Length: 198
Image (tube, rainbow, N blue to C red; front, side, top):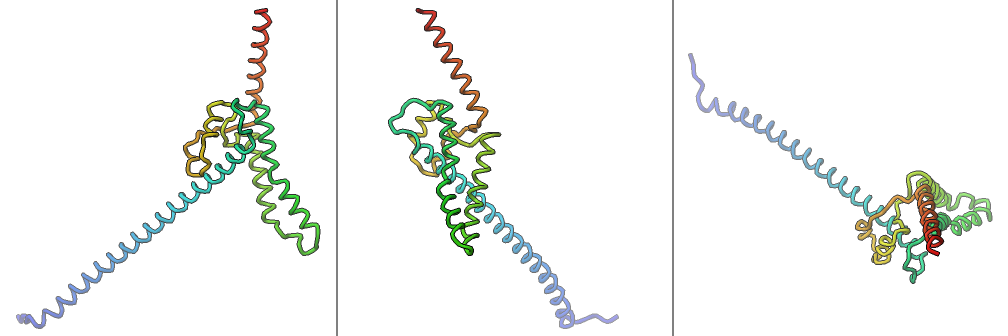
């Protein structure tokens, strides 16, 4: 039996060790690459979620500031349900002037028929969505028939960052009708109690 010398064994072993280490190294590189990709996807998702919250806060802040601008500054008592309903209907007409301008521009020339069509579509879709929300589940808004909520809205600094600290309600057509019935019942009770006292 003939034995191999150390010089003959060394190249064979070094190739085996190199191959084993190369496989481990390539597996390690693949795992690190996978982990980096996962981290990048997670960061991207967090950024998109954060951006979505910022956009929603901005839209809600604009809506609340519009309603705040429509209420008299000296007013201290809350709105009646009818006043709030009228204010919401006025809110739905806030784009009427812009829609008239777009229609006017489109009617002027042949080549301008599609000018501002995207903006017009966005406006009509937004108004349709808001009207459907008001008629069904409710608009996300502060109930201005509540004196505490009106006071809170007056004290609001107007920034989109602090919108998340405001308690919003779903104000719907049905809710306002219910409040009207309750208000008329209270007025009738007050009138009846005054008649009984006299």
